[in-house]
Image (tube, rainbow, N blue to C red):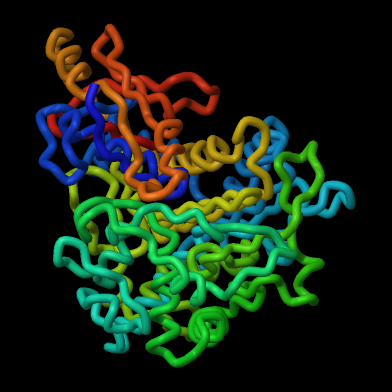
Amino acid sequence: MSTSKLSGLCSRCSIAFLVAALAGSTGAAAQDAAPEVAASPAQASAPSSVPATDASAASQVPQLTYADLSAWLDGFMPNAIKQGDIAGAVVVVVKDGAILVQRGYGYADVDAEKPMDPEHTLVRPGSVSKLITWTALMQVIEQGKVDLDADVNQYLDFKIPALDGKPVTVRNVLTHTTGFEESLKNLISEEGNDLPGFDALLKEHVPARIFAPGTTPAYSNYGASLAGYIVQRVSGMSFDDYVEKHIFAPLGMNSTTFRQPLPADWKPRMAQGYKDASHPARKFEIVGAAPAGSVSTTAADMARFMIAHLQQGKYGEAQILRPETVQLMHGTPLTILPRVNRMVLGFYESNYKGRRMIAHGGDTEWFHSDLNLFLDEGVGLFVSVNSPGKEGAAHPLRSTLLREFADRYFPVPDVKSTPLDEKTAREHARSIAGHYWNSRRPETNFLSLLNLAGEVKVVANDDGTISVSMLKSPTGEPIRWREDTPGVPPAAS
């Protein structure tokens, strides 16, 4: 069996790029043209547009109101965190420019039985922080200080080497197509271990380039940290000062900071991080690539940020981005394969059953978060938990919450498809069976040995479906994918 390239983007976006890789012929690069092979979940289909619903069906759809959503969340979340042995969670939903519901569940401090409070409790949203960094970068692009398609070296005081004569551009940074290998050095530590500032770390170790720029998605914390440094350089302010003045202050995000460790008077508000609710609390995490993931914030503050993006850059009287900049950011996809969730500028597409969504996930060791924007509905959903939980329960909790939220409030009728004949389905399934490896990987040092353990196996089943080793249902069962449209890869949810 041959090997193809597979990209990872946090935990959820890795699935999006997995299915993109599966669309390519076995052994082909992810950017190659897709053959006439594709798949959809065996239990559901994903239409390319939202079909109209009839009046009777629409009348039965629960309305997204404070009362209904509160009751639904209060039914879903307590059971989910209990079953997963997750210490606590915060959830906030915004709609039409305002907070609709915000809730806390479980504990910010298990021993003290201190509850999670969406207004007061600080959480670590990990790579969701990148959305703030990308927004700051779009501000300086909007101001004409940075060119989206310029060589990043124009804005640096050190050198990012070209590869095959092609420089890394700012657009490459925003779409995770810089071609950097994965760099794990000084990525995350704990309070008490002194690390240099993120700008010093950027210069200390520039990751090797393993792909030509613009060709292969390979998620890069180094790239996101580089974006923060560009903002710092062209603004003449420290990165922390810049985002506090130009994003947090205008939006009233008075409980949000990239600073590490936390200021002393903020520490009592910080949720403890746990392996699971049955284990002791862990130390505060220090993220070396700070602009890529060091934010501490509240659910209420993240609501303000979501509203600004859903309201064309505006929150109240504050305008942090011009409407045309927001549209550029949300609507400029990197299309390597058609009809696959793609990177836009900073966000990634998270379309579900034809609903247009953009999103970002975030994972530190102990905190696990998701931010999703339903662009056409003007709705945003943010969730953060303070432990991965039993057997990694945080991931299925987040994905199930999003899926069931969308199915409840924005349902789309199933679209009937004509399955391929069994012989053709089996042939197509066999053509993409094999071992796939991740383009987000170390390649030039001893950590490259980890790539063998990270291989993903795609299996052709006897019934013409495929199964993927890393993709399982919330109950732990392997998901089977059945081809329903030639040339379109699996529509992962």
